[in-house]
Length: 224
Image 1 (cartoon, rainbow, N blue to C red):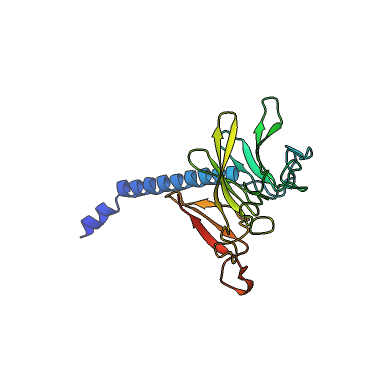
Image 2: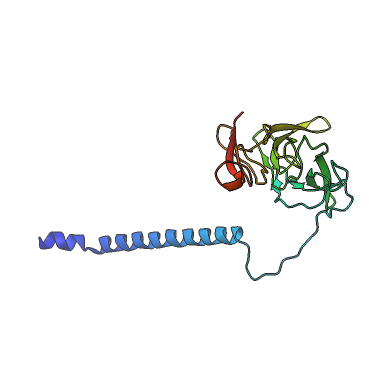
């Protein structure tokens, strides 16, 4: 028994154990440094002043105004968004636009209007941000337009498809086409989400049948 105990505690075993511990500490230290550097790269520095640069100032009327919604990027670094108004549009205040901002080689950004909501039936007042599908088509909502039952229309879900020389709009759904109680919803002013099967989901701020005056809103799904 004493011989086995002495062998177990021999200088060789003690040295081997020390080397193993040292290697483990070195690995843990290296991982800590890598994770710390990664966190610093992904986390903006706090307490540091930022510099603002105006990429585009809306002002010509036809380029839109009142961009309420957030922006999205495509894979090439172009920005896409909406404005709720545009002077050259369906009424005095305009019914809105979908636009793209592209970085130029010499610095700065160039705006291109992809669609002007112009006749009411194609939608009006796109307050929400856009989304892309895997094929590069854009989808969004308008809080008005579409069905003529509501005063300014009850809202739409639309798709913009890139074609030669521009983009083509398709209205996927107009809310409250039946008139009366808008049980299917009214005023979809939120952004959309896709599921894995390509179904679209969103909300409306009015319509439905769940509360007094039938104006508490709904959650909806549109299937291909």
